[in-house]
Image 1 (cartoon, helix red, strand yellow):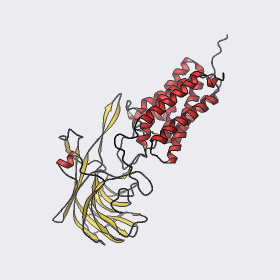
Image 2: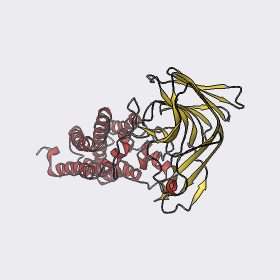
Image 3: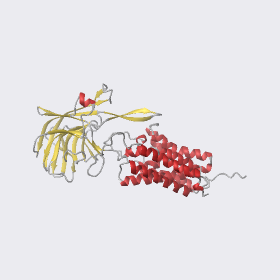
Length: 444
């Protein structure tokens, strides 16, 4: 019988495929209702939810305001709304904005004050510019497709902050005041020092006066971009909205305007939850196949991974075709290389099997759950063969988005190519050092 086709190895390959496919197809890609993602004009997944006090603006015009005050509220999740504190999360924001209509995901440029990051000029979700100073006078001008922001300490002398070209703006856009506040991220310690993220509801409030608009027609409108006023806090304490009185406008809002740090990433992570188990099965199979042809074992594992991961990703994860191809082929290649390493280490017999399990699947299992401190998990995914599975990452770390960037939530410390290079280096080392990895001569 050809060594590769031994029943034990065929069973191991089948078990590994089942470990990926069964939980991947049985678990939903998201919990509960799965809303369609909000996408910008370039297809990027974004967050776009805020309260908007607005009016029309033509191709030439400007809005000028003074931010008199900025406050906020941070509440605990239900049912402990009695634990409420005043304060602003770092990326709470309020200011002025020019936006291509009220549709979520439409093009925009905004000049704002933030909770802890000073004044920012942001546009089209991905772009963020820090503006020096603490001036409270803000101005946005429009000239065709060009939006320019200015700041002033006294409303008389103005300094240019930044500008952006929003290609394809229509003749008439919306201009006005806004407020948004993303959830407050807290970490609860678990396991041996790991952390689980908890997000609390927050709200930002901006108070403006000296509001003037040039090049505008029509009256003011007030509404939320995206859903709002659904939480207990908004229903029973302070509803998001806008109040205009005696020349002062008060805006209360929650949500965020910016990039969404995942492209179906949570779906991929939840769909491939069985990957560490499959890796354990394949590692043991590889370590116990030391006498088989390494290339044949690797090829069989690659095909198994290709079919198993491909079945799950294509059925469950809403990602682009290029991302799907990268994750499917990359995971299959990572599984194959890990099996090759285990096969070579298996020449040390029991010690080799133990070494292979500790080196390959154990770091993958320990970092897939919030068991270890984030810094320890990060290093395990930098220096062990498990680094290769960074190829499945679709989450992106953005400086203007607060999130728990940790392995247990799907963030790998290395980019996919670098992680695959670490894994490839291990495979190259064990393949080249033939003599040292051959079994000892027991005939003497």
